[in-house]
Amino acid sequence: MISKPILALAVFGGLLAQSAAQLSERVGDWPQWRGLHRDGVSRETDLLAAWPDDGPTLRWTLRDVGIGYGGPALVGERLYLLGDLPGGCHVMAVERLSGRLLWKTRIGPAGGNAAYPGPRATPSIDGDLLITMTQHGDVVCLDLGDGRLRWQKSLERDLGGEHPRWHFGESPLVDGDRVICTPGGSGGALAALDKRTGAVLWRSGGITDPAAYASPVIAHGAGQRQYVQLTAEHVFSVAPASGAVLWSVPRQGVRAVVPTPLIAGDEVYVTSGYGCGCNLYRVERRGGGLAVREVYSGKGMVNHHGGVVKRGDHVYGYSDGAGWTCQEFGTGKVTWSDRGIGKGCVTCADGHLYCRSEDGWMALVEATPEGYREKGRFKQPERSSKRAWPHPVIGGGCLYVRDQAVLLCYDVRRGG
Image 1 (cartoon, one colour):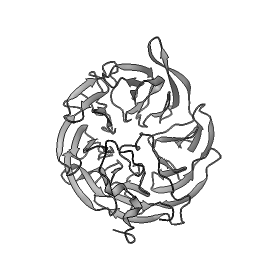
Image 2 (cartoon, one colour):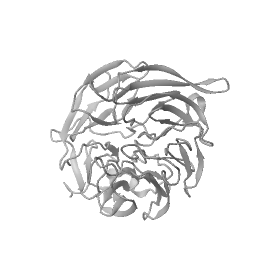
Image 3 (cartoon, one colour):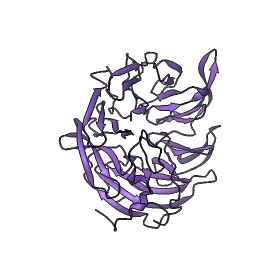
Image 4 (cartoon, helix red, strand yellow):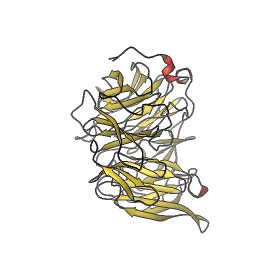
C-alpha cells in the first residue's frame, strides 16, 4: 500500500541506474548484515534531524514477505530479504521505489525453533550473486537477476555442524572468492566456501567451538587481514587464505551469544547478554605472530542481541538492566544511560541512533556522549504478536523496518 504519491526517481539519485558491483560501496546501498563494514553505521547524510509527532512519512507497506527476523539488503534499485512463506523458506527481491515483489525463490524448509520460527539472516549481495543462510543452516547462492539457485551447502549434513538451540542465526560473510560461515564442531568452527561453487576451501581446525549466533567480520589488527568471530567459548581470528588460527582468547558466554564483534583499527570489542558484559581486546605483534591483550572487561554494556554501534570515541546500544547506554570505547566507562523506548536494536546514520524497541517503537536519538537526546518517536503500525527484533536498515534516504511478514519503508530524507 502506498501511503502517498511515489516520489521522483531522483530520491535515489544515481542508485537506480547503476548495476550491482561487488559488495557495493555506494552510499545509498546496504549490501549485507549491518551494512558495508558490518558495523551498523550508514554513511547517509542529509537525513531528518528530528521527526514529526507522528513519525516520518510512510512510503509503502509490503505485507507478504513471510515470517522471519532478518532485515533487508539494499543494492541498486532492489532490496532482498528472507522469509518463511507457504511451502518453505524463500528469498525475495523487491523494488525499492515501490515495494513491488519482483521474484521469490524457495531455498529450504520453513520452521526451525518452535518458539521463534523463520530465518534470521540478511543476504550478502556480491556482484551478480546473492548469498545467505536459512535457519536450518543451508548456505545458498542465487543469481541476483532472477533468483535462480546456483549452489547450496548444508552446515549440518555437508560440514558436520550442529545447529544451536535456536537454530542458525548468522549472516555469512562474503570476502573476495570466499564465503565465511560458522558450522562449528570438530572439523573447525569456521569454514570458507568457494563463492562460485560452494566447494569447501578450508576449516579452522584450531578452534572447534559450536556455532553461536554472531556473524564473522573482517579486521586488520596489527596490520594483518583476518576474520574475527565470537562464540560461546572464544573470541578468535583466522587467516583468510588458510583458516589457520591467528589468535584466540577464552570468553565464556551464557545461554545465547549473539552480537557481532565491533572492529576499530587494532581493537576488537565484544558484548553479550545474560550478565556477560563487554570486553575490549587489542591485537598486537608478538613473537613473530599475533596475540591479543585485554584492555578491559566489565558490565558497562550487557547487550543481548540488539547490537551496538560506534560513533567517534563512544559505543551505543541497549544494556540489560541499565537501558540505552553510551560507553567510552577505549575505557569502558559509561557516560550515560536511559530507559528511552525500552529494550531493542540500533542502527546509526547521520549523527543519530535509530533505536527500535521490542514492542515496536522507533526513536531517533542524537548520537552524543552529552546525554540521551530523543528527537522523535513513533509506534510502528501493523504490529505482529512477536517481538520486533529485526534491526532497522537505512539507505537511499529511506528507513526500512521489518516485522515478521510486514516490511515498512519510511522517507527520512531531509526535505523529502
